[in-house]
Length: 69
Image (cartoon, rainbow, N blue to C red):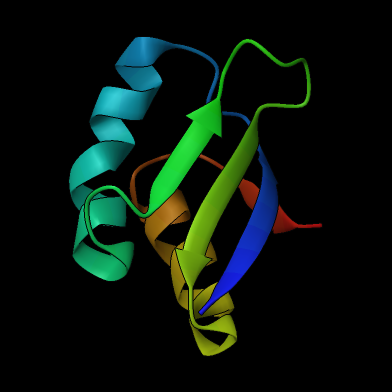
């Protein structure tokens, strides 16, 4: 398992609530975090490197953007 980081436009607790079911499905609850207090809104996910594209897709499915950094 690796720590993957993504720059996102998830900007508030409501946005986090919207993306939670999607990210929990792919990464599992407790394996991800979005730092909405930080200006670049970094999503950190602890998962297999192979899931990077899947994480991006589910964030987009939830209505937000994610870019691997």
